[in-house]
Length: 613
Image 1 (cartoon, rainbow, N blue to C red):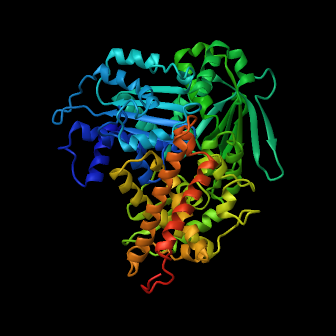
Image 2 (tube, one colour; image 1 turned 45 degrees about the vertical axis):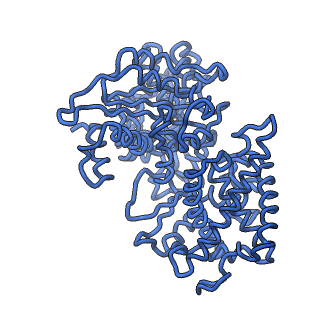
Image 3 (cartoon, rainbow, N blue to C red; image 1 turned 60 degrees about the vertical axis):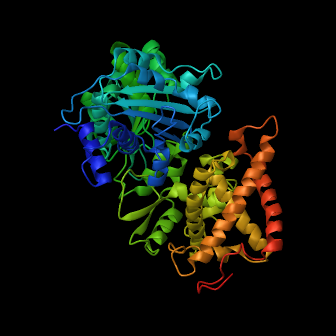
């Protein structure tokens, strides 16, 4: 029986609510629909585009009043995903309705509204925060309008034309992929997502191009018995492989197809208009298989557990080109390399390395390259030994996954690393973003967290681990305080929690420095998952709240000072090293005033016996 999007959505809502969703309005169902599509479809097909934690995922759901026609907005790496969902159907009969063409047309101008910003359009706080992350000069945009109604012909025509352009950004349309998915398209997307969860396709037959009277491929074997085949395949063969296996052939690929951006449009255009040039312009496809059998007479390699590790953009672009002009694509030749690698349980390091070095061009994937580091496995093991909170143990996710574990408290590696680095040194955006954060060179941020300054550690000492965990739990509590603050009194200076984490960390550092106390032991005292639930919780909570109050004031002062200059740009303020220096100065000034009137009140308790600091 074929899987239906509507049925899976209904089960998803029922699971979340604990009851049947029969009495929900279409607006409420649409909100669930956007999240379901992001979490269960996009995250499975392309995990690099969706946040790893439930908290981060929830922050992307901006649907509500003043949402400017956006239900879901996330930015990962240099790709922005924007969703608008429209649930439709009679609650009793399920009869499909027709889509209002004005709704889709309004969505086509969503980037115009987001670019203009809150000065021109009313925006809720979650949308403003998500919008602030966008880099309009270089980001690519995936706009997905998903509906269970029947799209109007006007909407279908508009989807082929694309978004409404923005005159101030002439190249924007080249960086935008616009999708209009009706129920049939959503059913196909769901089945594609479900196929990925089945891991690599069981078997793929790869037909190589005719090569005169020579072998259709070159075969290379090293001293360890590992074999690799290199040759050419036709563009139509690429399209056929994808048609037969869909996204399951990308099970080991760190990032799947990212839409019709400028590069992928170029691949498609070359395939159709200049197929004879394609082989020279394109980098080709790299794939793995657990076993390869030669059928040289048929120019075919029979590949068990076939998975493309680099070339998803090429495959999907050729598939789209084939659908548009199959005759032209038949003349396309694509370079392909297929390597025989034993299962990941046997050769995990080889699989890790070959996947990494075939994907080094995409910054969005850099965090994934660290997932199997010994130090990350060590951190995961240490989290397993932490005390439970509310009966739930912790699970450190050093690898991205779409699975949810209701019985566990999940902590994602990327979120953990970003938070601890922000608290200690500043947001990674100030230093270069994720590429910097997971760079293992001496100039990268990764060694600052998981190294000794010169090299990566194989494991953290108990003290090092508890200091990082203490920072994480402080940031966890700060995040709740910050949310209440911005809900009560919205401020552009407090827009990004990463900068708030730094300001709180700097406030705590300066407090201990002024008192001549070592900061590391104080951090370790916050490493209990239940520090704010224990007997002396009021002392710890009071200290953190006071630092938050001081940090909020410092951030607002620093922002106000910077924004008074004519060349000020809001987005750049959160990315400038000068901002960190300004915050440090503001905190120093505020701490001098505080320390004169309440000596020591910003220090964390020295013991866990309930004594005063």
